[in-house]
Amino acid sequence: MLGIVDYGAGNQTSVRRALDALGLSATISHDAETLSSCEGLIVPGVGAAGQAMQQLRSTGLDALLRDAVNQGKPLLGICLGCQILLEHSEENDTDLLGLIKGQCRRFASDLKEEDGRPAPVPHMGWNTLRNVHTTCSLLTNVATEAFFYFVHSFYVDPDPSQIIAQSFYGHAFTAIVGHEGLWGVQFHPEKSGRPGLQILKNFYRYCRKEDRHAQ
Amino acid sequence: MLSKRVIVCLDVRNGRLTKGIKFSGNIDIGDPVESARRYYEEGADEIVFYDITASAEKRGIFLDVVSRVAQAIFIPFSVGGGIACLEDMHAVLDAGAEKISINSAAVKNPKLISQGAREFGSQAIVVGMDVLAVPKTAAIPSGYEIVIHGGRLHMGLDALAWARQCQELGAGELCVNSIDADGTKDGYELNLTRAISDYVSIPVIASGGAGCPAHLFDALTTGHAQAALIASIVHYGQYSISECKTYLSDHGVCVRQTW
Image 1 (cartoon, rainbow over the protein chains, first blue to last red):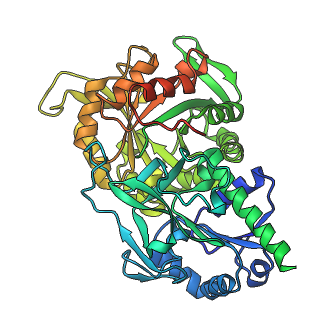
Image 2 (image 1 turned 180 degrees about the vertical axis):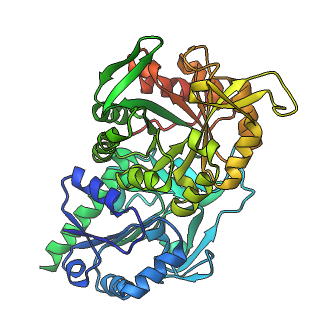
């Protein structure tokens, strides 16, 4: 069972629908006991980092997520849920969970695409990955030329050791951050067609495997 | 690199896919959920549903379609038609849509754009614009006027000025539909598409007039659009989405080809 962390910030139902379609069991919850019993956690999120962190702190879910990661429970952050894994965001000068070294930065307003056309913010639409760590279990059976659906104005700028894949919008930026068991994806796997669903499936499989090892 | 998008448009009436035929009303052309699933499988980058149901009482049927679509496809989709207030927006987003498309309601009440953008984020607000070519006047310096009710009501509003206003109010995207080109299959109105694309910094979706893949190419290159809306050319099997995308890719346009 996967736990989709409900902290009042958005797209948990679309993540749930995607997992349902894959036949993967998941529960949307903000309850500490329920989430603790899950084999892995997904932190969704849309909106502003400040608000999200405030919600997490006021509900105590910030501590729960830190403890879960420290105890080795697999975690996948999506979009804003990916950004809050880092230490600090330029978005309203917000302190984040600090689970991954690095910052969240805003895309500059004068970005240019590779063909010289203006690249407006937010970065919204389908984009590819580049400089991919092929050993990442999240990317098993995902074609290297696959596109993913992004909607964001901020991007993560982590410690280089934590960059798993980049994408390009005006400049290279991190699209997948973290390491085995603790991942953040800037795009929306639940809205990225089959390659996105494959990532969710891979995460689920990883969680199940961890469970077997633990026993 | 960010890809250009091919967006399929589906008109829904009383919960069924429909096609408007001039002077003879609407004909039923199938189940919107099944069509959405098919276009998703065929590689549509996004789908837009317009509710053209006449009565407000049948709204529930449409919302049911939206929620069933959300369980069947895993790409973004937007919903338009009959959205006049924040509650309407809430309802379709709760049902699982990513974006809301507003058209005449925004012209009548521009604040709806800023309210929606504040509540749900700019990325969720698409403003649809129906545009008619008119003689240039002091009020319509571009020669493109905003119209509503399928072109029957002229609003005295210059399309370029309105596009800029939509952007300033927080619209995330503009869907620019040429009433002149709509239904002709002679191609998008490229001058209009380009004029608006160059006048705003938010993405523009070209709409109205697609008859073949080359028209999509024109809109995405000459027209400077970020996305092209298609309907009848794929609804009746004339072209498949992958044929459109292969044509675009073969001609150097970056499109999503693996799904």
